[in-house]
Length: 306
Image (cartoon, one colour):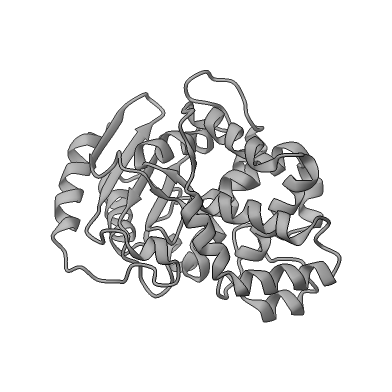
């Protein structure tokens, strides 16, 4: 059955938009706390070439932890299987900034999508490149086909100013010999990676790579192997929603990643990537309306990986 994505998205957008406004905008990053909580947009990019969006789908927002997938992709592309010597692939089942779990596991993060794991990925990029932020942005721009993607330096500075727990995580890993570079250099990259700004349109089209077996939709050339794409999709499915990954998988059934900026991007391999933005978060740190929309989307289209 061929789905009319435009009709489905418009129906879901108007259905979800009028629901009671539950959740809170993230309170602990001052720059993000100022975002208009009523913002709501969604964009779907299909492997067939179809593009459809509605609402604030062309307004930039801070992608936050969604950027962890992009930095992971670059590090995996460059380092291959040796990457997993430094970071695991298991769901954490605990808060994304858990210290006790990291200490119990002797400084090896449970997966690359929690804070400690993403910090290790940034350390690897600092080893690989003299200017890792420049290389990461060039990689994302190439993936997305958009040269205008950049960081919000004010958001990065805001996060750094209050990043005490992240500082604890990296110091613990440094003491366990799982950080090779200068701590300030690694954390600077980490905070700038989290502060990258993209639109729903840009995110959906960037994540088409993972729906397209590691190939750019626009050119067909491989950025990563199909095996790498499969593994990154698996990590998104099991680890992409903090300690709500099981609930998300149960309700939505698509590989995806959320961020505390209110964004969620998800994909159905071979079919589409979809990004939704609504800043109000549930207690687990995931967009309330974003989760609602994706759950109904997979029901309406009949497309989930299960």
